[in-house]
Length: 202
Ligand SMILES: [Zn+2]
Image (tube, rainbow, N blue to C red; front, side, top):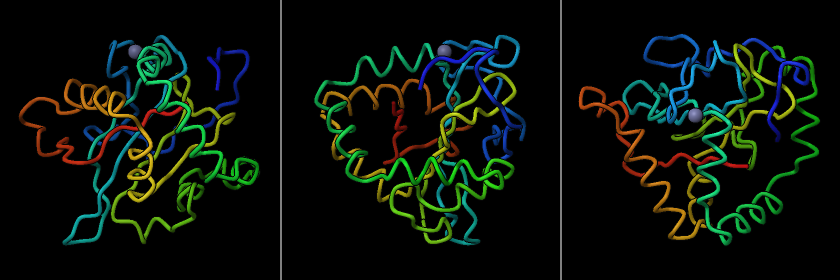
């Protein structure tokens, strides 16, 4: 992935699945630096984690945020060398990038990215069989970029990813979660993250 500008990206309308659940509209600000992502377009990432409600079986957001390219770079710089190498190995061993990219080239998928996110990008598990899952996608201003396919992965993959991260990197992620994702007290139930962590990947 690379920073995009208005000349070098192809965008599609932001799928509702990536909307801010609090107001059912696109995210407007970077979680960390508060940059306005629509009025001052830049590349940004949205990550959302869902957990299936035990009573009605519907997935509910556990945490969600948008983060700009600058802040991603600053954060991932803090990842230890060991974590970066382990993450690289994990993805090399577990994902068929060619297949994933090829599937994303299908115009039907680009017209309906939610369809593309119906199964785990790593293990192929259908979303209906997952109690927990996370989605990630890349955006620019009011659009979702199509150069990098969005990702969906189940709680089992999130656990495996956390297992390959070093203690140092896990501490950094805990700091990030504690500082930015616990939110004001009135949202603490909504944003409580007992186990799940954001997984910002490059
Ligand atoms: Zn930022």
